[in-house]
Each structure stands twice: as structure tokens, then as C-alpha cells.
Length: 402
Ligand code: LLP
Image 1 (cartoon, protein in one colour):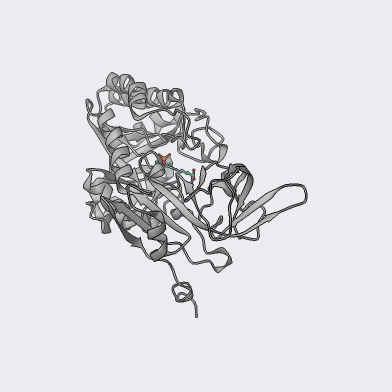
Image 2: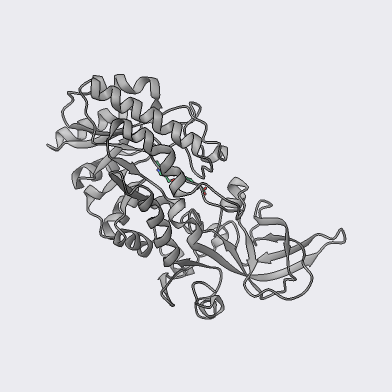
């Protein structure tokens, strides 16, 4: 069941593979972060990259969230979902002229610039348009987020931001630049961060910089701590929103400047499950058993890309002895594995399984490899469900081709 709605019933109508999300889980996760920061001026800018299906973005907007967009496409999706441009922060490591132009012309709240060169390009564009772009510089504090290397972004070996030791001079030198208004400072050291310490240290570095800039005559309106709060994929205790707030708030209070947060995973991660059907089973003489699903790395890339762990459960468990299974996808890639050596009840062809905690970085990272149409997405809310994105068809796919 998903919040009292039968998964079987959803699948009977909408088929597999399919993403099923709980609106309740999204509300609860958003509210937990909002409450944790309640005593301090804050704005939550939901990171659309985690899941940007319109209905999900609209739901977050209805809760009072603002938006963090990482591309021109995400800015436009946020606008379609009803966000005012000023409610959007625009982040991202390689912004094109076209993206910057749209952001400046539409009056995006803050552009988080990734380099001195980008600041200068923004200034040039904004000045030419007779505009003033609100910007924050993303700093790279050289802090190890202690997450997976592919999703750690705060080390000096990473491509993100400007080295912290250069930041102050970059602001100082551009203080008078026409077309720019320095609104804040920005940091994002990585994703799926599971301990408070790196988050606290990043806050310390950022607040220290903000205070130095104030001394330099560059008063800021906010410090943006980025996203990164992890979730409990393994079901073990995890840093909570309250613990996160408790770690960074003492730092923030040193400057008293409002904080911007850009959480993605922590808001939508737990809310979703990828439901798939077993299409084949096999057992090798060495005892290894495989359950082949009708979903694979095309629907959920995280295990193949990061070796990441997702719990897998049968939708209707059979009551017989459990054994070890490799749960795999149908794609012709050996990395197309959702889980190895999973202890599961017997699985048979046509059984349904749910791959849990796939609300973030699931559907958004899907591909059409092997000409597989994108899976539909369904939102369960208050006892009923609705399709929020229909299944892609082969005609949809071929519509782009001549
Ligand atoms: N802000 C910035 C500038 C970011 O780069 C990101 C994520 C976020 C906010 C949101 O981070 P979150 O709160 O979701 O951790 N595809 C990977 C995750 C990549 C995250 C990239 N940046 C995965 O499947 O784990």
C-alpha cells in the first residue's frame, strides 16, 4: 500500500515500471526542514534537479517552498509551476549566454555564479539590458562532505565554485561593477551528506566570508548553504533536519543574515518508489538466483552510476523461506543491477517489487537507452491517486526524428 492506496490497483491501471509518490511524505519532509529553521529567517529553495515533475514542483510551491533551478529548462519548469522569477535561485556550473540572458531578463531572484568570469559575463549582459542582476558567488571551501566521490563537490579537486581564498578579492574587485548586485554567498559541498560536521564547517566558512565582506563594505542579504542533507537509504538512523539546523544555526547567528537552503533529496527522496514486475527468474548451478525486472538503469540509474543502495521489497510477499537474490534490470549492461545478494521471499514471474526511496534522482535521471519509453509517474494523495506524467510512447520518442 501507499498511504492506504493499493499499489496493485494502481499498477492494474497504469502498468509497470512506474514511479509512485506519496504527497504526504513530501509535505512531511518539507515541513520538518521548515520547522527546524523556524526561529531564524530562512527560505527553502527546493532543488528541482531532484524531481522536477510539474505536479511535484507545484505541490512544493503550495507548501511555501521557493525553487532552485540548475538549468534554463528547470527555470522554465519552475515558472510553469507558478513560481515568480524572483522566487528562483539559478545555480549550475556551466551556464550558457542564453540561460543567463533568460535568467536576467526574467528577473530571477539570485544567480549563483561559479567563477569570476561568469560574474563578468552576467555583469556585461545585465548592463547591456539595463538591468541589475542579483548574484551570489559559489565558493569552494575544500571540505570533504564524506559522501560518495561522484556527489562530493566541495573539494579543491572538484570543478565547482571558486577557491575560498580567492572569494573575498573577487567580490572586492567587482564591487562597483555596473549590472551586478551582490546579494549573497553560496556553498554546496555535496549530496547525501550523512553527518553534521561537514555541513557545520561549510557554514562556518561561509559566515566568516560574509562577515569579512561586510567589513569590506559589501553587505549581503543572505548566505546560501546549498543542499546536501542525506536520507536513510538503509533504514538506519540518519541526521535529521533538527540536527542539521542545530549544527548550522549557531554559525548563522554570528552574522544574523537570512539563510537560503537548497534541499532536494531530503524533501522528495523517501516519497517515491519504483514499482516493477518480475519478467524472468533464473538460478545458476552455483546457487546464484536472479530476478529480472521490467525496470532497469534506464528507469533508475543510481545503483549503476554510484553503486548506491536502495531497499527492494516484494509488493505482496509470498510466505515461504527467504533466500538470496540478485535483482537486476533488462538492459545489456552488467552494471544494470538494483541489488546483489538481497534476502527476499520467493519471487516468481509477474510478481511486483518496489525499489524504495527513489523519489529523488530517479525519474529525472532516466534515459531512453534501448529505446525504452520513460515510465509514468503517479502521485498518491489523501486516499486517491493521479497520473502526473503519462508513460512515454514510441511515437513520442520518434516524434523528434525525421
Ligand atoms: N544545490 C546545488 C548547487 C546542487 O548541486 C545540488 C545537488 C543541490 C542543491 C541539491 O542537493 P540535495 O539536497 O539533493 O543533496 N544524482 C545524484 C545527486 C546529485 C546532486 C547534485 N547536486 C544522486 O543520484 O545521488
